[in-house]
Structure formats: structure tokens, C-alpha cells
Amino acid sequence: MANPMTAEQAVFLLQGIMLPVLKTEQRATKAVLEAVPAERADYRPDPNAKSAMELVRHIAAAENRFLETTINGVFNTAPAAFPEGAKTPSEFAAWYSQQFEKNCEALSKMSGEQLIKMVDFRGMLQRPAVMFLQFGLNHTIHHRGQLSTYLRPMGSKVPAIYGESYDSALAKTAAKA
Image (cartoon, rainbow, N blue to C red; front, top):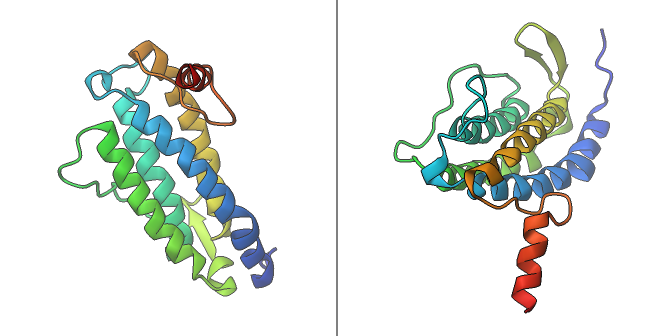
């Protein structure tokens, strides 16, 4: 089957849509990761749920994995290489942001031909490399929402994600008083 996307369309999708959206979403994701209190990072709402720290690590690794899939033209199934000293949610949030910036820089330099290279995802589907940015974005938003529901039970505040949260509105009101 011929590639359903042209190189020019892929560049427009990356530069005109995906990079700006990814950067906006990354700020919200970083705020949620940073809001996880280190002393409660083992919290899980159910025995079958991931802990907050497992979600922090998963979000940080997976989002960058999808960016790297687009950059490298291959979906890598190897375990993520986290920094050796990272232990707290804020340390993982810092690593996540650093990797994200590096990956966005590499993405911004990609050619249309690189962006339309067909990439296999675990033998289940094949799509142009640029499409993995949307897969990664959906994945991150899903797990970020999951993690944000953990924050109040852990004694933390929910940051603004799409507009103010209850907690960020209270903080803004308190700052004005």
C-alpha cells in the first residue's frame, strides 16, 4: 500500500500542529508529575492500579519513547534508560523535560521523507513516523488524567491543565488577598 501521506503534509503536521500542541501539553504533564509528593509516591487507589511513582515513570518514559519513535523511525521496546540517581517524582519530571526538549529539537530538524517513513508498532500496525506523535500524545493525556486523580488523595493539589483547576483557582485567589 502506498503511503497515505506526502512529505509536505507530514512537515505541515509536525511544524504547524503537533510541535505546538506537544509543547503545550508537556507543560501540563510536567506540572502533574511535579505535584506528586515524594513521601506519598507509593500511593495507589486500588491494589491492581499502578502506584503514583509507577505512573510518573511510565508517563516520562513513554512520551519520550513515542517522540524517539518518530525521530528514529523504529519503535524501541527496550526498557527506558532513566538517570541512575533519579528517585523522586520531581527528579523524573526534570529528566522528562530535559529529554522532551532534546527530542523536540531533533523533531524540528526532520525532513518530510523521514516523517513519512513507515514504522511498525509491535506487529500490530504500521503508520508514518509522524503519526506516532499523536499516539504518544493520546497515551500521555490518558495517564496524566489518571495520575491527576491521585493527587488530592495523596494530599497534593491539582495543577491547571486545561484552564484553572479548583486548586489553582484557590491559589490565585489567595495570592490576590
